[in-house]
Image 1 (cartoon, rainbow, N blue to C red):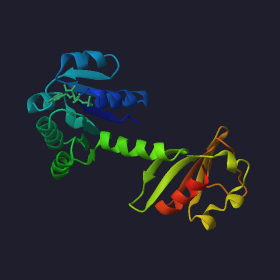
Image 2 (cartoon, protein in one colour):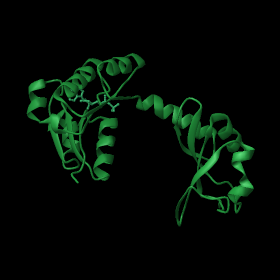
Image 3 (spheres, rainbow, N blue to C red):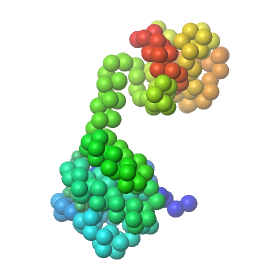
Amino acid sequence: MKAQQFVIIGLGRFGSSLALELMAMGYEVLGIDHVEERVEEMSGQLTHTVMADATDEGIMRSLGVRNFDCGIVAIGDNMERSILAAILLKELGVKQVVAKAISILHGRALSKLGVDRVIFPERDMGIRVAHQLTTPNLLDYIELSKDYKVVELTVPACMDGKSLSELNTRAKYGCSIIALNREDGVIVAPTAHDHVHQGDIMVVIGSNESIVEFEDEAV
Ligand code: ADP
């Protein structure tokens, strides 16, 4: 199967880190920036790099960006240019357009223009770090809705060696352990007889309240 192709506009801190990670994952990446040094820094590390103004329709057309599966507008310094670049990607027919927003209003404008996914990297990272700093065993989490989430927690010493039936999370807190990740592999949908060991990672699903209660027990 052909590797998915990404075009990234703006090779600042966010755009370049995203581009390098996609490359490391085996995808093809075209990086575009209108500043020569940024392009030079990334050339040789990405599939292709081009110095160009992404708001120039003729150039974007000639670069064949419409053939890319996903276009990411990672312009962080100039709202007008970010919006113009996003419109162009949409109009040229890029299948999925993602854009970084620097403010709520900027994000709203991008959504109204039909951008498929608007991201707020600084805001989201701030929220994530706040959760991780205040919950010692929390590695990561996904919000399923405003009331439910999935979290990854490290098994603390006080739970070492216990079976899931002993932990009894469903009856005690109302949340469920849906996977265990440990050195010898991942157990998906563990049973009541599976045991957890200190340092293993438990993937837990439940309501926000049930997970807070379980996290409090897990310190
Ligand atoms: P970060 O916070 O991710 O470092 P920056 O604002 O520093 O974000 O980086 C955005 C990048 O987008 C810069 O390298 C800038 O040169 C590039 N850029 C801005 N406008 C355009 C444009 N019209 N075409 C191509 N690249 C652009």
